[in-house]
Length: 274
Ligand SMILES: Nc1ncnc2c1ncn2[C@@H]1O[C@H](COP(=O)(O)OP(=O)(O)OP(=O)(O)O)[C@@H](O)[C@H]1O
Image 1: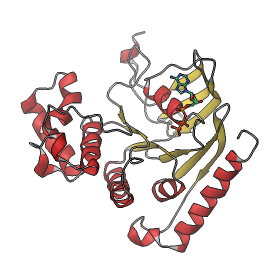
Image 2: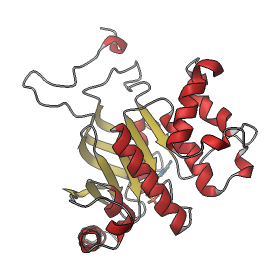
Image 3: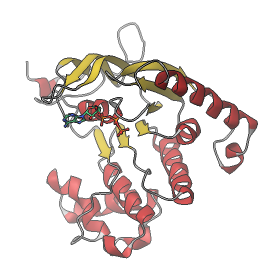
Image 4: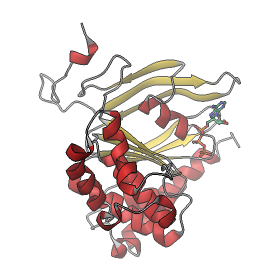
């Protein structure tokens, strides 16, 4: 059977919603001998905002890259139960990746940079224009289509990177410490932007961060990893009845969420691997 023609219904026969992506016992050993991941399993449902949190070197980026198909697992399985998959086993067009660096082409305008993923799919500039305009509006950069990256602040460049990731309307957005290099105020603004677009679009997000505060603010589920070898230490939901906004940041509920995440993270760090 041609894999590209395989499309699974979003619900199984029993009526249960199919997960968007499942990792089953994924291990990764690099050629250097480092065992970066050991038997990692994770099931992500559509619409979740999952943060991957853990000490440096616990395999967060490795896990994200394997999910994105940017690196191979040494063993284990990645499945996309509700997507059409291509011959590489990936849900073509359904995943976008945002890196820590915006990785923009300096010789292209903002418009040209956001056009790139559509251009690679053969979409002409004219046909792409409304989609690019929409993606730029989503990140508040509708007035900067003709600007060059050098004319933008670090936060604006990251917004362009997010617009480029959104322009293909992916089901899953993978973000690898996207705001780590930004100042605190810009980071908080971008956190709010990402939350808004998550709510507006219903996109699923897997977000790698070192920050307890960021993960507790953004996520409705936290996966804490531990190192040497990288594996899941804890996986728990974070619910709040409050709107996640500036008031939430100063609320008792947010303080408690941060404390909970921090305690679990300390448990992951303090269990003998460091
Ligand atoms: N290409 C590579 N070749 C060899 N070892 C690697 C490679 N990439 C990562 N590693 C190792 O694999 C382990 C996991 O790395 P990874 O970058 O996934 O961790 P991380 O949790 O994302 O770290 P950080 O939070 O510091 O970015 C580390 O020990 C790292 O040194």
